[in-house]
Image 1 (cartoon, one colour):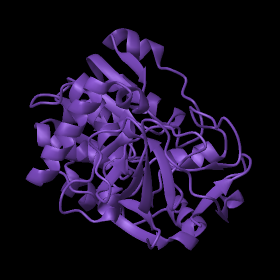
Image 2 (cartoon, helix red, strand yellow):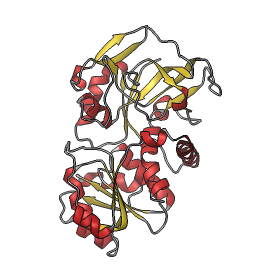
Image 3 (tube, helix red, strand yellow):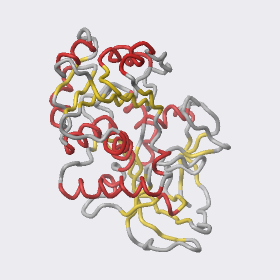
Image 4 (cartoon, one colour):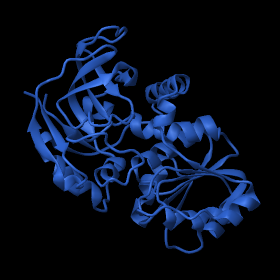
Length: 332
């Protein structure tokens, strides 16, 4: 029997239990994935504490939206999916049928072929971080030479992905971090400049780095603790992409700064763009090409065995000097 890590109420990751279950058969339009690896994401932590932008429909539930594995069954009306080949799930909220499992049934719309030459661990470490960064950086704000982006909490996987994608497009990328020892990592990922939180006037530093113009967009998962610090340096028609609350507090919008810059506050979820078939196809094509060219590379921090899922969460929530995806290998 396959095993899965499940949660029975909003108790945080400490309430996860490893349980056996009967493998499900895929229904019409669905596939079944023998999961080789699945990745941890900060949104999962919020979800387990019921402070995410989505909630479970019922319990018990599995956590996770990012898996890679071998397709071992397909339902009726599924075409173009090959049994025996490695595929990845796309970032989408799967409610109680999440990825923390050895066997997963998922709608075939949310599956994509693993890029060639990548291991299961690498393949499960792509789509959440790069698609999350791709839509705001490329599709909406049109990263290109002459554009400047601020990436806060940039050592997070989506932040690092944004640096890589922005560099690939020729934009100027400014990263923030709490710790100066992260500077070499961020510069290697694509940061032209690194600002250390707590090092002084962030808006003043941004105006200086942009010759007074300000930033064209901010890609911000922090919350109330950051937005007011950079808002005075918003360029004309700037956009704030707000996609998380690492400080667990919703921001109060800096209305005066936004009035003056004609700025837009954009509460952003990648799920809305994955749901859009045309947008999703553009994102996948960009990422396949960028991986093939070597412009972006999945970074793996550490792997844990299936039995070590709670240990992996212990590790993820502590300050780290190494960065990249934390991944569970099922051993299958």
